[in-house]
Amino acid sequence: MTDIHEDGRAGIDAALVRRLIATQFPQWAELAVTAVKVDGWDNRTYRLGEDLTARLPTHESYTAAVHKEHEWLPKLAPVLPVPIPEAVAKGSPGEGYPFHWAIRRWLDGATASYETVADLNEFARSIAGFILALQGADATGGPAAGAHSFYRGAPPEHYHDETVEALSVLKGRIDTDLARDVWDAALATSWDRPPVWFHGDIASGNLLVKDGRLSAVIDFGTSGIGDPACDLVIAYTFFSGESRVAFREAVGQDAGTWARARGWALWKALITTDLPVVMSVLADHQAG
Image (cartoon, rainbow, N blue to C red):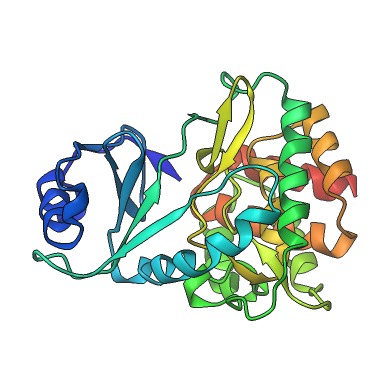
């Protein structure tokens, strides 16, 4: 998820980044350091000159992604249909900053939105193609779903208590009986094949667009190998009507995987009180 933040969030600012660069990567010390306008919650991102970025986790729980992405992004990139972040260097704790951090190649493009995407049906098919290519990547030795992926790629049971609590809070505002049916249907299925690669956060904020078309996919912090159902959530958070049909037809997947996808989408929508997404998921469940 992305938003606009003031510089200095989580104790990270441009001055800190300049000190880290100067001490650990002096070859880039003369590059301008500027905060990106639209930033993620888990990391602070700064542009270094024209071609690089510095990406600093805001909490220890996000540092596993630094090491994971540094190892696996170069291995995934060759088999994917659009560019993904290129790992350039890995920084160490220093200058009062306690975590490892990353330097990446800058990827140009606008964040995906209904204004920047030219043809939603074509865009849906492009996202489906990316997901299928990712699932086809060699998963040997890949990071199994778990804490590092915030349990994306794992069975949705991990978030059962949160889901049940959210249903009790929203009773009277949504059809909680139907929502519980959606959740129970998700829990009743499982990924019974070898683990495959998943991104973990296929959302508009992590999709870049140029000339109206998908140009890059960023932020593999919740990626890993396991159940790819979590990567289908965009069917409910961004697509609707014809574009949802186009996505679903292009990406395929079996009924059980779609049941778990609805479960993942429902859990997140419930805990964030995103009622339009809740309604989309419930309607899709009823439609079968």
